[in-house]
Amino acid sequence: MKSCYLFLVFWLLCQSLTAQNVPSQSYQLIKTRNAVQYKNYYLLTLFKQLPGLNKMLKENSMLEKISRSKSEKINEALKNCKADISCYARALKFSPEEITAISQQLSNSYHENNELGKLVSNHLIPSGCYALYANENPKNLLLKAWEQDANAINYAIGVYVEGNKPNYPKIDSISFSSKDKEYAELTATNAWLALQSDHQLFFEPAMQFALQALELNERNEAADDEPMDKGVNFAAHKQIKKTDWKKYPYSVILVPGAGPEEKDVALSAGGMIRCRLAALQYKKGVAPFIVVSGGRVHPYKTKFSEAYEMKKFLMQVLEIPESVIIMEPHARHTTTNLRNCARLMFRYGMPIDKPGLACTVKSQSYYITNILPERCKKELGYYPYKNGKRLSDTESEFYLNTTSLQIDFDEPLDP
Image (tube, rainbow, N blue to C red; front, side, top):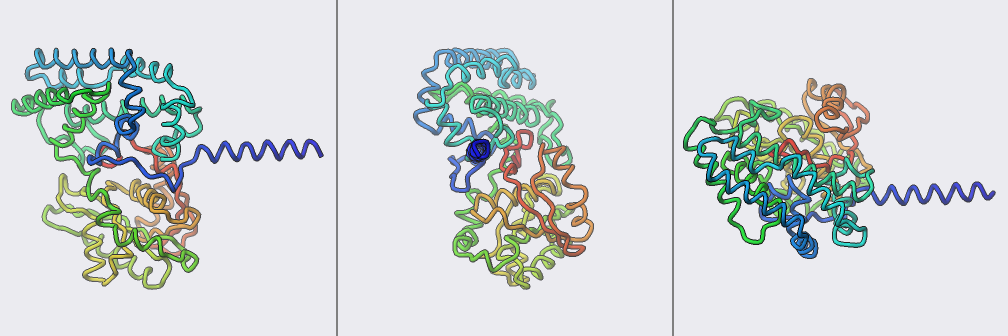
């Protein structure tokens, strides 16, 4: 009897600890005017936005010393780099030694009851933005989050300043030639501007340099239509709160985008046919919402958003009301169609145990169920969804995985 009691206590304790390490649907992200910043570098955004934490970091003498040293390197680069793009990039990126030194200071300063401890328990864990590290102890989670954000800044500088190859070169590459004298001048000016703000924290020059590089490349896609719940998704977001979920077998009908290859084509034939398939299921009453997913992807630097054009087609041609259409205008390939849909389902307060319905043409439908999970595991590091039943050649069930909230450090256009 005693052993059963001890087992029960142990099980309840494990359940409690597990519950503490999962994201919360009631958590509200701390957002800034620059959505590219908080979506890519959430920890650093919190360092800036939480007053007590900001003060604590500014008063850390070792972090201040690292910050001064970084500024000196950048000033030296401004004097000596001239037209050498990589010279500026090296000065602005975080070196392995700098990342380690900052990790050490954060580790030394961490206590579960101080501002850093509260940061982890009140923000990093419930936000889900660093979900891959949820099983780490709180201090290690903080350090992993810092290392991720530092590497994310380095990656953005590498691709959008130095011209390194991104994961998808045909759609995401740099807009400039490193041999262009005008580009060297733009880069030098960007480095100078990164130093101009007063009372900066240790990471701010590098972060501003990366953000401004994305801006110069016209690569602020991560901010498209944000904040969506106040704009393009306002009507649907409002409707979600009134929805009786018991009436529906599925929470959403997901429509993955199909970008056109022609520059002047707003919506591809594939996008149209997928919308028709989704509208048919919606009219059968299988789900209260349609999620249209796809960003400004094809062709290179297109101005057309797949999600926006599909929403327009659903409303204007198929007479689907705006209040049931949820736009997801950031996904750049099928892996993030599923991931970003899972994120919206979670952030918008939909029941996470109710499946969604992926609705698309036969070839992509079987790709989603048979091939895509392992591609997601390889590229994202986890499975953003779990397959449910296949209903037909064009419809299959999926269940969201809350690890989908994890920020992707090497995809700054859709992190």
